[in-house]
Image (cartoon, rainbow, N blue to C red):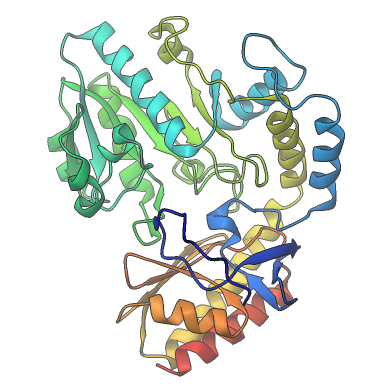
Length: 388
């Protein structure tokens, strides 16, 4: 498979024996020309697949003009992108970052300033068990997975963790000292576990009652993954802060924090900045991505339903599958045993999938996947699970 020699690399991922040489649409190729159907999409980043002609054209055009300018100056694309994203989220301000974890850090700083302006010591946060918001120390303080948190504790943030969809526990955890509640509408790293609309609405009502902020992490679920612009839309709520990242710049590193004017009013000018965040190249590519996305949302919903139906049919024949959880093109397959071995077997058959929480196979196909490609992926997966 033309594997790289990782002699100088930190072993920070369970790296598979595949060195990707190129990509085209929903497929990637190794150095020997072997083709793999990509249902990982760079962990949700390559939402338009690989080498999308409109994206590569925009990259070539903008890189010939200006790649980086810093935020000491303006450029034509940043304010326009901020307006588009705020319009989609129903919020007022945007701050650009390089990644989802940096967006989390910025959201925490916004919440801290908001809380301190209202009540001395209002620095408490509430997060969900099983959650994941990034790997910097601030973001890890909110991770509802002890194995991720404990090697780097203690943290400066006081956090109470509650179980997803437990409205009673959430109500008991939030108080007048709470600055923010942070949640993912669908826990991605936590095993593709959706929050109910009732729980999301309860979180909105409880935070309003205690003058706390509701932060919704849409880094994986946002910008089309569930078939909507944002997953929180299904609950009919409007958060105070929304973080986005993965697909935003179609493969280039970019994140953003979107927030209300009330939050902005509490944040001192110059209290947060990013050298690379919101540069000309990434903003121009993000604008192109969002234009392309407009026409893809119905397709995402359609293929998502097709894949869910196919997986449910597979579950009826494969006892190894305990449950299917999905929304749009975000799909989780709960197995009755560890799943990493099946990831490797799928790779050997030309299919890229991944495993989270040890026994959940996660599929994050590109938004452009065809019905035929989706069926091809399900057939390969069925053969992999048949060997169990």
